Image (cartoon, rainbow, N blue to C red; front, side, top):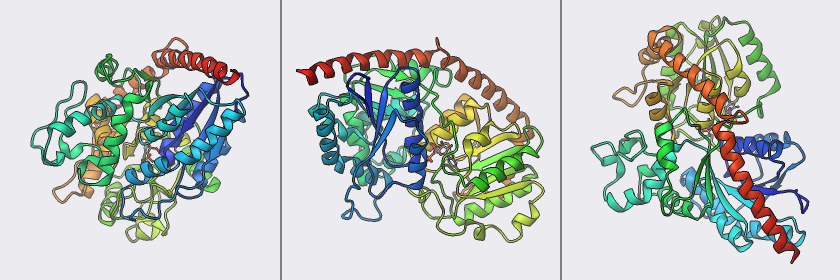
Length: 479
Ligand code: UDP
Protein backbone atom coordinates (compact mmCIF):
# COMPACT_ATOMS: atom_id res chain seq x y z
CA UNK A 1 0.00 0.00 0.00
CA UNK A 2 1.02 3.60 -0.50
CA UNK A 3 3.43 5.56 1.64
CA UNK A 4 2.22 9.11 2.38
CA UNK A 5 3.78 10.78 -0.68
CA UNK A 6 2.84 8.54 -3.56
CA UNK A 7 -0.55 9.17 -5.13
CA UNK A 8 -2.80 6.35 -4.03
CA UNK A 9 -5.97 4.95 -5.58
CA UNK A 10 -8.26 2.33 -4.05
CA UNK A 11 -10.32 0.14 -6.36
CA UNK A 12 -13.31 -1.98 -5.38
CA UNK A 13 -14.21 -4.52 -8.04
CA UNK A 14 -17.64 -6.14 -7.78
CA UNK A 15 -17.48 -9.89 -7.32
CA UNK A 16 -16.91 -11.77 -10.60
CA UNK A 17 -13.70 -12.22 -12.55
CA UNK A 18 -15.04 -10.28 -15.55
CA UNK A 19 -15.21 -7.15 -13.34
CA UNK A 20 -11.73 -7.63 -11.92
CA UNK A 21 -9.80 -8.16 -15.18
CA UNK A 22 -10.19 -4.68 -16.77
CA UNK A 23 -9.67 -2.98 -13.39
CA UNK A 24 -6.37 -4.82 -13.08
CA UNK A 25 -5.37 -3.44 -16.46
CA UNK A 26 -6.39 0.05 -15.28
CA UNK A 27 -4.28 -0.41 -12.13
CA UNK A 28 -1.27 -1.40 -14.24
CA UNK A 29 -1.59 1.72 -16.38
CA UNK A 30 -1.98 3.93 -13.31
CA UNK A 31 1.17 2.43 -11.88
CA UNK A 32 3.32 2.26 -15.03
CA UNK A 33 2.38 5.57 -16.65
CA UNK A 34 1.24 7.76 -13.79
CA UNK A 35 3.21 6.49 -10.78
CA UNK A 36 0.21 5.69 -8.57
CA UNK A 37 0.14 2.98 -6.00
CA UNK A 38 -3.06 1.01 -6.09
CA UNK A 39 -4.92 -0.97 -3.47
CA UNK A 40 -7.55 -3.45 -4.55
CA UNK A 41 -10.20 -3.83 -1.88
CA UNK A 42 -12.04 -7.05 -2.56
CA UNK A 43 -15.53 -7.67 -1.20
CA UNK A 44 -17.10 -11.12 -1.43
CA UNK A 45 -19.73 -13.34 0.12
CA UNK A 46 -17.31 -16.24 0.38
CA UNK A 47 -13.54 -16.66 0.50
CA UNK A 48 -11.80 -15.39 -2.67
CA UNK A 49 -11.94 -17.72 -5.68
CA UNK A 50 -8.91 -19.39 -7.22
CA UNK A 51 -9.34 -17.19 -10.30
CA UNK A 52 -9.40 -13.96 -8.21
CA UNK A 53 -6.30 -15.01 -6.28
CA UNK A 54 -4.46 -15.98 -9.40
CA UNK A 55 -5.19 -12.59 -11.04
CA UNK A 56 -4.21 -10.60 -7.95
CA UNK A 57 -1.12 -12.67 -7.13
CA UNK A 58 0.28 -11.97 -10.59
CA UNK A 59 0.46 -8.21 -9.88
CA UNK A 60 3.54 -6.14 -9.02
CA UNK A 61 4.06 -5.25 -5.35
CA UNK A 62 2.93 -1.62 -5.83
CA UNK A 63 -0.55 -3.03 -6.42
CA UNK A 64 -1.74 -4.38 -3.08
CA UNK A 65 -4.88 -6.40 -2.35
CA UNK A 66 -6.99 -6.43 0.77
CA UNK A 67 -9.73 -9.05 1.05
CA UNK A 68 -12.64 -7.80 3.14
CA UNK A 69 -14.31 -10.33 5.45
CA UNK A 70 -17.09 -12.21 3.57
CA UNK A 71 -20.40 -10.32 3.68
CA UNK A 72 -23.25 -12.27 5.25
CA UNK A 73 -25.85 -13.08 2.59
CA UNK A 74 -27.42 -15.98 4.50
CA UNK A 75 -30.82 -14.23 4.47
CA UNK A 76 -30.75 -13.77 0.68
CA UNK A 77 -32.82 -16.39 -1.16
CA UNK A 78 -30.81 -18.76 -3.33
CA UNK A 79 -33.00 -17.68 -6.25
CA UNK A 80 -31.75 -14.05 -6.00
CA UNK A 81 -30.20 -12.87 -9.26
CA UNK A 82 -26.48 -12.16 -9.53
CA UNK A 83 -26.97 -8.39 -9.67
CA UNK A 84 -28.77 -8.52 -6.30
CA UNK A 85 -26.06 -10.68 -4.74
CA UNK A 86 -23.29 -8.46 -6.11
CA UNK A 87 -24.91 -5.21 -4.93
CA UNK A 88 -25.69 -6.62 -1.48
CA UNK A 89 -22.16 -7.93 -1.13
CA UNK A 90 -20.71 -4.47 -1.77
CA UNK A 91 -23.29 -2.68 0.41
CA UNK A 92 -22.86 -5.04 3.35
CA UNK A 93 -19.08 -4.68 3.11
CA UNK A 94 -19.30 -0.98 4.01
CA UNK A 95 -18.58 -1.50 7.75
CA UNK A 96 -15.38 -3.39 6.87
CA UNK A 97 -14.46 -0.73 4.32
CA UNK A 98 -15.00 1.99 6.93
CA UNK A 99 -12.71 0.17 9.35
CA UNK A 100 -10.04 -0.20 6.65
CA UNK A 101 -10.20 3.49 5.67
CA UNK A 102 -10.03 4.36 9.39
CA UNK A 103 -6.76 2.44 9.79
CA UNK A 104 -5.34 3.85 6.56
CA UNK A 105 -6.18 7.34 7.71
CA UNK A 106 -4.52 6.74 11.10
CA UNK A 107 -1.40 5.60 9.23
CA UNK A 108 -1.63 8.63 6.87
CA UNK A 109 -2.03 6.31 3.89
CA UNK A 110 -5.59 7.16 2.91
CA UNK A 111 -6.20 6.89 -0.85
CA UNK A 112 -7.12 10.07 -2.70
CA UNK A 113 -9.61 8.28 -4.91
CA UNK A 114 -12.00 5.37 -4.68
CA UNK A 115 -12.96 3.68 -7.96
CA UNK A 116 -15.97 1.36 -7.95
CA UNK A 117 -17.86 -0.31 -10.76
CA UNK A 118 -21.51 -0.43 -11.77
CA UNK A 119 -22.75 -2.20 -8.62
CA UNK A 120 -20.43 -0.55 -6.10
CA UNK A 121 -21.86 2.94 -5.60
CA UNK A 122 -22.89 2.36 -1.97
CA UNK A 123 -19.19 2.44 -1.13
CA UNK A 124 -19.43 6.19 -1.93
CA UNK A 125 -20.95 6.63 1.55
CA UNK A 126 -17.65 5.60 3.12
CA UNK A 127 -15.61 7.57 0.58
CA UNK A 128 -17.58 10.73 1.51
CA UNK A 129 -16.90 10.25 5.23
CA UNK A 130 -13.15 10.26 4.53
CA UNK A 131 -13.19 12.94 1.77
CA UNK A 132 -11.96 10.38 -0.73
CA UNK A 133 -12.93 11.31 -4.27
CA UNK A 134 -15.51 8.87 -5.75
CA UNK A 135 -15.19 7.58 -9.33
CA UNK A 136 -16.90 4.90 -11.40
CA UNK A 137 -15.18 2.57 -13.81
CA UNK A 138 -17.83 1.42 -16.25
CA UNK A 139 -16.46 -1.87 -17.58
CA UNK A 140 -18.73 -2.00 -20.64
CA UNK A 141 -19.25 0.45 -23.51
CA UNK A 142 -20.55 4.03 -23.86
CA UNK A 143 -23.68 2.76 -25.61
CA UNK A 144 -24.84 0.80 -22.54
CA UNK A 145 -23.67 3.57 -20.21
CA UNK A 146 -25.84 6.06 -22.12
CA UNK A 147 -28.77 3.69 -21.74
CA UNK A 148 -28.16 3.34 -17.99
CA UNK A 149 -27.90 7.10 -17.52
CA UNK A 150 -31.31 7.31 -19.21
CA UNK A 151 -32.86 4.50 -17.15
CA UNK A 152 -34.24 6.64 -14.28
CA UNK A 153 -36.20 8.63 -16.89
CA UNK A 154 -37.48 5.44 -18.56
CA UNK A 155 -38.45 4.18 -15.12
CA UNK A 156 -40.56 7.29 -14.56
CA UNK A 157 -42.18 7.39 -17.98
CA UNK A 158 -42.83 3.73 -18.83
CA UNK A 159 -45.46 1.97 -16.73
CA UNK A 160 -45.41 -1.53 -18.22
CA UNK A 161 -42.61 -4.08 -18.24
CA UNK A 162 -39.98 -2.88 -20.71
CA UNK A 163 -40.13 -6.24 -22.51
CA UNK A 164 -43.77 -5.49 -23.41
CA UNK A 165 -42.88 -2.32 -25.33
CA UNK A 166 -43.85 -2.81 -28.96
CA UNK A 167 -41.51 -0.22 -30.49
CA UNK A 168 -37.75 0.06 -30.13
CA UNK A 169 -36.68 2.72 -27.64
CA UNK A 170 -34.69 5.57 -29.16
CA UNK A 171 -32.19 7.14 -26.79
CA UNK A 172 -29.94 9.85 -28.28
CA UNK A 173 -26.56 8.29 -29.00
CA UNK A 174 -27.71 4.68 -28.56
CA UNK A 175 -28.40 1.96 -31.07
CA UNK A 176 -32.26 1.65 -31.13
CA UNK A 177 -33.21 -1.08 -28.72
CA UNK A 178 -36.26 -3.21 -28.03
CA UNK A 179 -37.28 -3.79 -24.42
CA UNK A 180 -36.43 -7.50 -24.75
CA UNK A 181 -32.81 -6.56 -25.40
CA UNK A 182 -32.49 -4.26 -22.36
CA UNK A 183 -29.90 -5.37 -19.80
CA UNK A 184 -31.00 -8.45 -17.87
CA UNK A 185 -32.13 -6.83 -14.60
CA UNK A 186 -34.57 -4.67 -16.59
CA UNK A 187 -36.47 -7.74 -17.77
CA UNK A 188 -38.52 -7.94 -14.57
CA UNK A 189 -39.08 -4.60 -12.90
CA UNK A 190 -40.54 -6.24 -9.80
CA UNK A 191 -37.37 -8.22 -9.18
CA UNK A 192 -34.87 -6.97 -6.59
CA UNK A 193 -32.12 -6.95 -9.22
CA UNK A 194 -33.94 -4.18 -11.13
CA UNK A 195 -34.25 -2.14 -7.94
CA UNK A 196 -30.55 -2.55 -7.25
CA UNK A 197 -29.61 -1.57 -10.78
CA UNK A 198 -31.76 1.55 -10.59
CA UNK A 199 -30.41 2.37 -7.14
CA UNK A 200 -26.80 2.17 -8.37
CA UNK A 201 -27.48 4.07 -11.57
CA UNK A 202 -29.21 6.88 -9.67
CA UNK A 203 -26.05 7.27 -7.58
CA UNK A 204 -23.84 7.69 -10.69
CA UNK A 205 -24.32 11.44 -10.38
CA UNK A 206 -22.45 11.42 -7.07
CA UNK A 207 -19.25 10.36 -8.83
CA UNK A 208 -16.61 12.94 -9.76
CA UNK A 209 -16.19 11.12 -13.07
CA UNK A 210 -17.02 7.95 -14.98
CA UNK A 211 -14.25 6.06 -16.77
CA UNK A 212 -15.44 3.89 -19.66
CA UNK A 213 -13.67 0.89 -21.15
CA UNK A 214 -14.32 1.77 -24.77
CA UNK A 215 -12.73 3.89 -27.46
CA UNK A 216 -13.68 6.52 -29.93
CA UNK A 217 -13.50 4.52 -33.19
CA UNK A 218 -15.94 1.95 -31.90
CA UNK A 219 -18.84 4.25 -31.05
CA UNK A 220 -18.02 7.82 -32.15
CA UNK A 221 -21.58 9.18 -32.06
CA UNK A 222 -22.43 7.77 -28.67
CA UNK A 223 -19.22 9.08 -27.23
CA UNK A 224 -19.89 12.58 -28.51
CA UNK A 225 -23.28 12.58 -26.82
CA UNK A 226 -22.29 10.92 -23.56
CA UNK A 227 -19.43 13.40 -23.14
CA UNK A 228 -21.67 16.45 -23.55
CA UNK A 229 -21.89 18.17 -20.16
CA UNK A 230 -25.31 17.87 -18.52
CA UNK A 231 -26.66 18.52 -15.04
CA UNK A 232 -26.47 15.45 -12.84
CA UNK A 233 -23.99 13.73 -15.16
CA UNK A 234 -20.35 13.60 -14.10
CA UNK A 235 -17.66 13.98 -16.77
CA UNK A 236 -17.22 10.80 -18.82
CA UNK A 237 -13.70 9.70 -19.83
CA UNK A 238 -13.08 7.11 -22.55
CA UNK A 239 -9.94 5.26 -21.50
CA UNK A 240 -10.16 1.90 -23.30
CA UNK A 241 -9.57 -0.57 -24.63
CA UNK A 242 -8.07 -2.05 -21.47
CA UNK A 243 -7.83 -5.79 -22.05
CA UNK A 244 -6.69 -8.93 -20.32
CA UNK A 245 -2.99 -9.24 -20.97
CA UNK A 246 -2.40 -12.72 -19.60
CA UNK A 247 -3.76 -16.09 -18.66
CA UNK A 248 -4.96 -16.31 -15.08
CA UNK A 249 -6.81 -19.49 -14.43
CA UNK A 250 -6.00 -21.93 -17.18
CA UNK A 251 -4.71 -25.30 -16.18
CA UNK A 252 -1.11 -25.38 -17.44
CA UNK A 253 -1.79 -28.62 -19.32
CA UNK A 254 -4.87 -27.17 -21.01
CA UNK A 255 -2.95 -24.01 -21.83
CA UNK A 256 -0.18 -26.02 -23.46
CA UNK A 257 -2.70 -28.27 -25.22
CA UNK A 258 -4.68 -25.34 -26.71
CA UNK A 259 -1.71 -23.35 -27.92
CA UNK A 260 0.15 -26.39 -29.21
CA UNK A 261 -2.93 -27.50 -31.12
CA UNK A 262 -3.37 -24.00 -32.58
CA UNK A 263 0.29 -24.04 -33.70
CA UNK A 264 -0.61 -26.94 -35.99
CA UNK A 265 -3.65 -25.33 -37.66
CA UNK A 266 -3.63 -23.22 -40.86
CA UNK A 267 -3.56 -19.41 -40.66
CA UNK A 268 -6.93 -17.84 -39.78
CA UNK A 269 -8.79 -21.15 -39.95
CA UNK A 270 -10.03 -21.75 -36.39
CA UNK A 271 -13.23 -20.51 -34.77
CA UNK A 272 -12.75 -19.97 -31.03
CA UNK A 273 -15.99 -20.66 -29.14
CA UNK A 274 -16.39 -19.47 -25.57
CA UNK A 275 -19.07 -17.96 -23.36
CA UNK A 276 -16.86 -16.06 -20.93
CA UNK A 277 -16.13 -16.77 -17.32
CA UNK A 278 -19.61 -17.93 -16.42
CA UNK A 279 -21.86 -18.44 -19.44
CA UNK A 280 -23.75 -21.69 -19.79
CA UNK A 281 -26.16 -23.03 -22.41
CA UNK A 282 -29.26 -25.14 -21.97
CA UNK A 283 -28.73 -28.82 -22.72
CA UNK A 284 -30.71 -28.53 -25.96
CA UNK A 285 -28.67 -25.52 -27.10
CA UNK A 286 -25.41 -27.21 -26.14
CA UNK A 287 -26.27 -30.17 -28.40
CA UNK A 288 -27.36 -27.96 -31.33
CA UNK A 289 -24.14 -25.95 -31.07
CA UNK A 290 -22.06 -29.15 -31.04
CA UNK A 291 -23.85 -30.57 -34.06
CA UNK A 292 -23.70 -27.23 -35.90
CA UNK A 293 -19.96 -26.91 -35.36
CA UNK A 294 -19.50 -30.44 -36.72
CA UNK A 295 -21.82 -29.72 -39.67
CA UNK A 296 -19.94 -26.52 -40.59
CA UNK A 297 -16.84 -28.56 -41.39
CA UNK A 298 -14.73 -25.65 -40.04
CA UNK A 299 -12.01 -25.93 -37.42
CA UNK A 300 -12.94 -24.95 -33.89
CA UNK A 301 -11.59 -24.61 -30.37
CA UNK A 302 -14.52 -24.85 -27.98
CA UNK A 303 -14.40 -24.15 -24.23
CA UNK A 304 -17.28 -26.16 -22.77
CA UNK A 305 -19.08 -25.88 -19.49
CA UNK A 306 -21.85 -28.18 -18.25
CA UNK A 307 -25.26 -27.07 -19.54
CA UNK A 308 -27.69 -25.39 -17.14
CA UNK A 309 -31.10 -23.75 -17.21
CA UNK A 310 -29.56 -20.44 -16.05
CA UNK A 311 -27.30 -18.69 -18.56
CA UNK A 312 -25.04 -17.18 -15.90
CA UNK A 313 -24.99 -20.19 -13.58
CA UNK A 314 -21.19 -20.45 -13.37
CA UNK A 315 -20.56 -16.74 -12.89
CA UNK A 316 -19.14 -17.04 -9.39
CA UNK A 317 -17.44 -20.35 -10.00
CA UNK A 318 -16.15 -20.72 -13.54
CA UNK A 319 -15.13 -24.35 -13.11
CA UNK A 320 -17.98 -26.71 -14.10
CA UNK A 321 -19.09 -28.86 -11.24
CA UNK A 322 -20.06 -31.78 -13.47
CA UNK A 323 -17.93 -33.27 -16.18
CA UNK A 324 -18.96 -31.13 -19.18
CA UNK A 325 -17.65 -33.74 -21.65
CA UNK A 326 -20.34 -36.18 -20.56
CA UNK A 327 -22.99 -33.87 -22.11
CA UNK A 328 -21.52 -33.92 -25.64
CA UNK A 329 -23.40 -35.90 -28.30
CA UNK A 330 -22.24 -39.48 -28.47
CA UNK A 331 -19.19 -39.94 -30.68
CA UNK A 332 -18.77 -36.14 -31.11
CA UNK A 333 -15.13 -35.96 -30.05
CA UNK A 334 -14.22 -38.85 -32.30
CA UNK A 335 -16.13 -37.46 -35.30
CA UNK A 336 -14.54 -34.02 -35.01
CA UNK A 337 -11.04 -34.95 -33.87
CA UNK A 338 -9.46 -33.86 -37.17
CA UNK A 339 -11.06 -30.42 -37.02
CA UNK A 340 -11.82 -29.54 -33.42
CA UNK A 341 -10.41 -29.27 -29.94
CA UNK A 342 -12.70 -29.18 -26.92
CA UNK A 343 -11.42 -28.03 -23.51
CA UNK A 344 -13.26 -27.95 -20.20
CA UNK A 345 -14.35 -24.76 -18.36
CA UNK A 346 -11.46 -22.37 -18.91
CA UNK A 347 -8.87 -21.60 -21.58
CA UNK A 348 -6.04 -19.06 -21.92
CA UNK A 349 -8.22 -16.68 -23.93
CA UNK A 350 -5.78 -13.76 -24.08
CA UNK A 351 -3.15 -15.99 -25.75
CA UNK A 352 -5.68 -17.80 -27.93
CA UNK A 353 -7.01 -14.58 -29.45
CA UNK A 354 -3.52 -13.42 -30.39
CA UNK A 355 -2.77 -16.71 -32.19
CA UNK A 356 -2.51 -16.44 -35.96
CA UNK A 357 -4.55 -19.63 -36.51
CA UNK A 358 -7.65 -17.96 -35.04
CA UNK A 359 -10.05 -16.76 -37.75
CA UNK A 360 -13.12 -15.93 -35.67
CA UNK A 361 -14.66 -15.87 -32.21
CA UNK A 362 -18.13 -17.08 -31.35
CA UNK A 363 -18.70 -15.11 -28.16
CA UNK A 364 -21.33 -14.37 -25.52
CA UNK A 365 -20.38 -10.69 -26.09
CA UNK A 366 -19.07 -10.09 -22.58
CA UNK A 367 -17.37 -6.74 -22.98
CA UNK A 368 -13.90 -7.99 -22.07
CA UNK A 369 -14.15 -10.77 -24.62
CA UNK A 370 -15.44 -8.34 -27.25
CA UNK A 371 -12.55 -5.91 -26.69
CA UNK A 372 -9.97 -8.72 -26.59
CA UNK A 373 -11.21 -9.80 -30.00
CA UNK A 374 -11.20 -6.24 -31.35
CA UNK A 375 -7.62 -5.49 -30.30
CA UNK A 376 -6.56 -8.62 -32.13
CA UNK A 377 -8.72 -7.90 -35.19
CA UNK A 378 -10.62 -11.20 -34.78
CA UNK A 379 -14.14 -11.09 -36.32
CA UNK A 380 -17.06 -12.11 -34.12
CA UNK A 381 -20.20 -14.16 -34.09
CA UNK A 382 -22.49 -12.60 -31.49
CA UNK A 383 -24.25 -15.07 -29.18
CA UNK A 384 -25.35 -12.99 -26.19
CA UNK A 385 -26.53 -14.74 -23.02
CA UNK A 386 -27.03 -12.47 -20.00
CA UNK A 387 -26.17 -9.15 -18.25
CA UNK A 388 -25.78 -6.37 -20.89
CA UNK A 389 -24.63 -8.80 -23.58
CA UNK A 390 -27.67 -8.38 -25.85
CA UNK A 391 -26.97 -4.64 -25.99
CA UNK A 392 -23.30 -5.32 -26.69
CA UNK A 393 -24.31 -7.67 -29.51
CA UNK A 394 -26.52 -4.96 -31.06
CA UNK A 395 -23.63 -2.52 -30.98
CA UNK A 396 -21.12 -5.00 -32.41
CA UNK A 397 -23.45 -5.98 -35.25
CA UNK A 398 -24.39 -2.34 -35.88
CA UNK A 399 -20.76 -1.29 -36.18
CA UNK A 400 -20.02 -4.23 -38.51
CA UNK A 401 -17.76 -6.16 -36.12
CA UNK A 402 -19.98 -9.22 -35.74
CA UNK A 403 -22.38 -11.55 -37.49
CA UNK A 404 -25.40 -12.65 -35.48
CA UNK A 405 -26.48 -16.21 -34.82
CA UNK A 406 -30.28 -16.10 -35.21
CA UNK A 407 -32.57 -17.72 -32.67
CA UNK A 408 -35.22 -20.10 -33.96
CA UNK A 409 -38.87 -19.74 -32.93
CA UNK A 410 -38.25 -22.15 -30.08
CA UNK A 411 -35.59 -19.79 -28.65
CA UNK A 412 -32.76 -22.10 -29.69
CA UNK A 413 -30.11 -21.49 -32.38
CA UNK A 414 -30.52 -24.61 -34.52
CA UNK A 415 -27.60 -26.64 -35.87
CA UNK A 416 -28.19 -25.45 -39.48
CA UNK A 417 -28.03 -21.84 -38.35
CA UNK A 418 -24.85 -22.53 -36.40
CA UNK A 419 -23.26 -24.13 -39.48
CA UNK A 420 -24.45 -21.24 -41.70
CA UNK A 421 -23.08 -18.47 -39.55
CA UNK A 422 -19.79 -20.27 -38.86
CA UNK A 423 -19.16 -20.88 -42.57
CA UNK A 424 -20.24 -17.32 -43.30
CA UNK A 425 -17.68 -15.90 -40.90
CA UNK A 426 -14.73 -18.11 -41.78
CA UNK A 427 -15.12 -18.26 -45.58
CA UNK A 428 -18.10 -16.13 -46.70
CA UNK A 429 -18.36 -12.62 -48.16
CA UNK A 430 -20.07 -11.43 -44.98
CA UNK A 431 -17.08 -12.73 -43.01
CA UNK A 432 -14.74 -10.70 -45.22
CA UNK A 433 -16.67 -7.51 -44.50
CA UNK A 434 -16.48 -8.12 -40.75
CA UNK A 435 -12.76 -8.94 -41.00
CA UNK A 436 -12.16 -5.66 -42.83
CA UNK A 437 -14.03 -3.70 -40.18
CA UNK A 438 -12.15 -5.50 -37.43
CA UNK A 439 -8.85 -4.55 -39.03
CA UNK A 440 -9.88 -0.87 -38.93
CA UNK A 441 -10.98 -1.17 -35.30
CA UNK A 442 -7.74 -2.91 -34.35
CA UNK A 443 -5.79 0.00 -35.86
CA UNK A 444 -8.03 2.46 -34.02
CA UNK A 445 -7.41 0.61 -30.75
CA UNK A 446 -3.66 0.96 -31.23
CA UNK A 447 -3.99 4.66 -32.12
CA UNK A 448 -6.02 5.66 -29.04
CA UNK A 449 -3.49 4.10 -26.68
CA UNK A 450 -0.44 5.81 -28.19
CA UNK A 451 1.18 8.55 -26.07
CA UNK A 452 -0.86 11.21 -27.87
CA UNK A 453 -3.95 9.01 -28.36
CA UNK A 454 -7.50 9.88 -27.29
CA UNK A 455 -7.74 7.32 -24.45
CA UNK A 456 -4.24 8.05 -23.15
CA UNK A 457 -5.01 11.77 -22.98
CA UNK A 458 -8.28 11.07 -21.14
CA UNK A 459 -6.50 9.03 -18.49
CA UNK A 460 -3.82 11.75 -18.21
CA UNK A 461 -6.56 14.28 -17.52
CA UNK A 462 -8.10 12.10 -14.81
CA UNK A 463 -4.77 11.30 -13.21
CA UNK A 464 -3.91 15.01 -12.90
CA UNK A 465 -7.17 15.54 -11.01
CA UNK A 466 -6.43 12.59 -8.78
CA UNK A 467 -2.93 13.82 -8.01
CA UNK A 468 -4.30 17.25 -7.09
CA UNK A 469 -6.81 15.61 -4.76
CA UNK A 470 -4.03 13.52 -3.20
CA UNK A 471 -2.16 16.71 -2.31
CA UNK A 472 -5.32 18.00 -0.63
CA UNK A 473 -5.82 14.76 1.30
CA UNK A 474 -2.16 14.77 2.36
CA UNK A 475 -2.51 18.33 3.66
CA UNK A 476 -5.64 17.36 5.59
CA UNK A 477 -3.83 14.37 7.08
CA UNK A 478 -0.88 16.58 8.08
CA UNK A 479 -3.07 19.14 9.85
N1 UDP B 1 -11.60 -15.75 -19.81
C1 UDP B 1 -10.49 -16.54 -20.00
N2 UDP B 1 -10.68 -17.85 -20.26
C2 UDP B 1 -11.91 -18.43 -20.36
C3 UDP B 1 -13.05 -17.60 -20.18
C4 UDP B 1 -12.85 -16.25 -19.91
O1 UDP B 1 -9.35 -16.08 -19.93
O2 UDP B 1 -12.00 -19.62 -20.61
C5 UDP B 1 -11.40 -14.31 -19.53
C6 UDP B 1 -11.56 -13.51 -20.80
O3 UDP B 1 -10.31 -13.38 -21.46
C7 UDP B 1 -12.12 -12.20 -20.28
C8 UDP B 1 -12.90 -12.58 -19.03
O4 UDP B 1 -12.42 -13.87 -18.64
O5 UDP B 1 -11.06 -11.33 -19.93
C9 UDP B 1 -14.39 -12.69 -19.28
O6 UDP B 1 -14.93 -11.41 -19.30
P1 UDP B 1 -16.18 -11.02 -20.21
O7 UDP B 1 -16.48 -9.60 -19.94
O8 UDP B 1 -15.93 -11.37 -21.61
O9 UDP B 1 -17.35 -11.94 -19.74
P2 UDP B 1 -17.94 -12.35 -18.31
O10 UDP B 1 -17.19 -13.55 -17.92
O11 UDP B 1 -17.75 -11.20 -17.37
O12 UDP B 1 -19.36 -12.65 -18.63
